[in-house]
Amino acid sequence: MGDAMNKLLLSALAFGALVMPAAAADMAPYFKGPVIAPAWSWTGFYGGGDVGGAFSSSTATWNPLPSPGVFGAFPATGNVGGSGFAGGFFAGYNYQLGSSFVTGIEGDWTGMRAGGALNQSWALVPGFVGPGATTSLNSDVEWTASLRGRLGYLIWPNLMAYGTGGAAWGKIQYGASSLSPIIGYAAGAAFTNTSSGWVAGGGLEWAPFTGFGLLLRAEYLYYDFSNAPTAVSTPGGFLPSGYAWSATKMSVARFGMAYKF
Image (cartoon, rainbow, N blue to C red; front, side, top):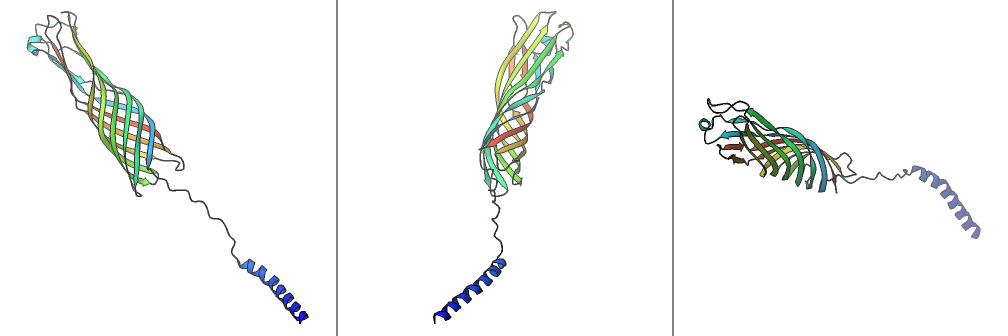
């Protein structure tokens, strides 16, 4: 009985030794799957800076008072807009809506020197003003600030086209002078005005490395400052000069870089 049991065990072990390698050969090899990176999301706070160019447009007018006939010269008017470098900073918050849209709010401040000057000789009413008389008028936008809403559409998961608009403020410097050396006339005005208005525009924003929060953008903004200041200067013993500026309209094109937190 013992010999029969031993023979049975030896036979089972031999059979197992033959079957196990074949079964192992039939098993598919195991490989660990790739680690899937988390999907990029636009949701979050961000902040950065931008540089570009600003282009302003405004009309200024000199009014000889109380009338051109009495003063002896006709009014002078012309464009006092111009262009200049612009640079500043911005910050905001985005919230991604599904796979296609992003909404958010953004504030910015931009320093610049965008403006120009008008220098015009007096057009004389016969019999009063002598030669060499000129009027100069100017305006310069020193800075702008805005608070805007944004709505974006995702062209790709990491590339967004967006529109933006909201309230805007701008500090604008004004200056004027009217001189006639022959008759000894000198009048002028100089002051700064902080104007309010609106701004609208759009751009493209790109996250080139979705594992890192770097954001790059190209943007265009149009500003309209509706305040139209006026000033009157009355030299002692002479007729007054009236100065008026129209609303300032401005375009800003800029490139920016930000970091999403």
